Image (cartoon, rainbow, N blue to C red; front, side):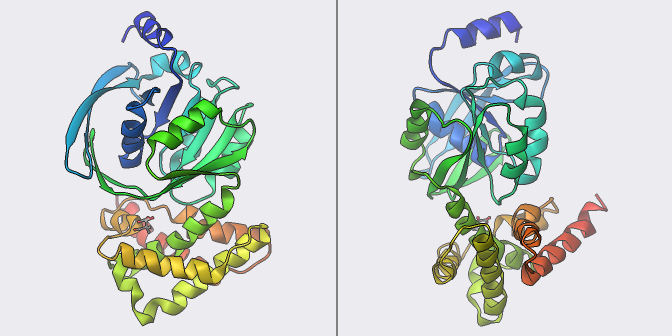
Length: 320
Ligand code: PAF
């Protein structure tokens, strides 16, 4: 799209501008939820030119809708990003830093960044990259899958937990737009304990389902109990060293609830291994191991789970 025309399009809008990096299933789901509101939402694309893209969404009631999304090309990044009030980063944890590097310098100081991915870790690096912007973090258990590149289907309801991490606060207008448009979303003054709690579910379920090639429900079997308990116990110890106090019994109860509630599903890590994709292990068990070493703690079981998945991954990624 011609830059002048593009500029006049965005200038005419007085609505808060939200840009999304990452058009995966969650990125497209959040796009759908926000674009129905008084917010102007677009995707930050990687092609040179901006383009309009038909985006299809199938909701839980199997109703299908198609709308037109603006994919902002590299030629228009600076025009768009200088007006962006919220940048939502929905790429995988291991892609966050590289995705933000060329973009962060184009953001205004009053832009807020929200990281929304599985696992933990990138926030520590992004914190050092900020140029006056505020940073919030979030996690979602909403289920969505991509039927094709620009068609996403919602597969399950779930809570979305959001909260401030560092720097200037998110504006109340943007915050209320997120909370009123993302179903079952909640704001937490202290988001880190929520992220550690979600991490406890992932450190137990994700690597175990991938290693044992099973659905989530099979992890209820007694043979897996010791490993699950040890992995979650280590996580709680590391979190405590980081001054995040978690209730171990509560964490284990929640892990087994999720195993039961999602019994028929294959975890995201199982799917990554099955499709021979890079997994999120570094930001799940890898994060526990990394934080444990900061406090001279041993996280042996998490280390073993990390090593097993890394070996599996290397087996297929080195042949790719
Ligand atoms: O990563 C996943 O697959 C999910 O976070 C969870 C909760 C483990 C369910 O499959």
